[in-house]
Image (cartoon, rainbow, N blue to C red; front, side):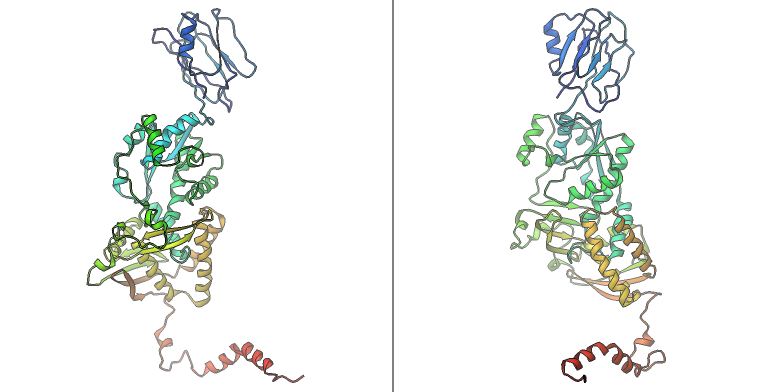
Length: 515
C-alpha cells in the first residue's frame, strides 16, 4: 500500500499536491523529487517510511527527476497552495524555494483505489469492521448509509457516533418507510406474490428500496463505489448488486465477505481491536434476524435443523396463539383500485396502515410461518417469519378479488403471481418483465375497490364479510330461486357442448363409431 507521509521542517507550513487525472495511484516504481536539503538521510527514511517507492532529494530547485513509470515533479509549494491527490502517479508541486515541503497523503489500498465508497451500514459488528477494512484495502473515504424501513428506532439510536468511531466520514440516514410500503409492498400485494407457497417476500422487497437509495446517495456525495455486508451464501448479495447494476452500472461494488480473511465473530472482534474500532456491546443474538415494517425473519441456531420446533421465546412481534385473547377481534380493511387505504374506516398513509395492522394482527398471533425454502444460490434454508399485518392484507385482498375477478382473469393473474414472486425473490425488481407485470396487475385491479372484514382469533384470520361496488357476484343470479337472467334449462345444451370432447373419446373407446 503506497502512501506519502509528510516531509517538512518544524515549521507548520504544509504543501499539498495538485492532482492530474489518471485511474491508478502511485506504483512502487514511482519517485518523489523534493528540492530541499534534508537534515539527514534518517529524516527522509523516517518520514517516508510508508511510501514504497524511490525518494530522490535534490538541493537544486531547477532539477526534475523522471522515473520510467511515473513522475512526481517537486518544487517548493507556497503556503497558500491547495489541492488533493487523485487517481494519479504524476503529481506537481509548485511554490517558492527555501520554503518547507509537505506532502498531502496519497493512499492506494491493498486491493486497489476508490475515491469514496457508500456502505450499507447497520452499526453491528460486521459493518463496523467493514469501515476500516474498506479504507485499508481501497484507500477510500467511507460514507455510511442506513435506511429506515421500519426496523425500529433502537436500530438507529447512536448510529452516527458508531459510524464515525469506526472511521466513516459521515452517516446518511433516510426514512424510506412510506416509499417501501407504497412502491414495493403494495405492488407485490396487488400481484399476489408469494414465494414457494408461504414466504411473503419481506426481505426480498426491502433490499431494492435500500439499494436504490444507496445509488442516490452515491450520486449525491460523489462516490465511485458501493459496498454491502452480505455473505457469499445468501440471496441479499444478488438483490443489492442487481439493483446497483440496473440503476448505475458504472458504480464499483465491494463485497467484503467474498474478499476478506475474516471467518467469524472472533476474527471480526480481533480486527476491530487492532484498528481501534469500538466493538458494539449489544448482546449477540443466537438467531440471525431481519426486521422491517413488513416482517421479522429468524434463521440460525436450532432452526438450522428442520426437525426442531421453534422455541416459544424466539418470536418478537406476535404473541403465541395459545396466549392470544380469548375473544375474537374484527378488523375492516378498505381498498381503492387494489391499494389498501383504511383500517376500520380510518384513512391512513401506507406505512401507518401497515403499522396499525401489525399491532392488531400481532396481538392475536396472526402471521407466523415456518418454512424450508430454496435459496437463489442453490441451497435450501429454513426460516421462521412473523408477518402479521402482511398476512391480514393478503387474506383480505384475495377475498376482495373473489368478488371482482372472473375465472379466466383470476387464473391468469395467479399464474403471473408465481413469476412475479420469483423475480422479486431473485433480486430482479428493476427487470422490465416485473414492470410489465405491474402494468398488467394495475389494469386488473382497477375494479378492486371495497372492503373486507376479518375475524382474528388465536392465530387465525378468517373472512367475516366482503363487499365491493364492482362485485361480479349478483344475488339475483346466484340464488337457487328461478330468475330471468339465468334459465336453468339452458344448462342442458351447455353441458352437451362443453362435454362433447369427453363424450366423443368415450364413444371411440367403446367402438361406437362405425367404419
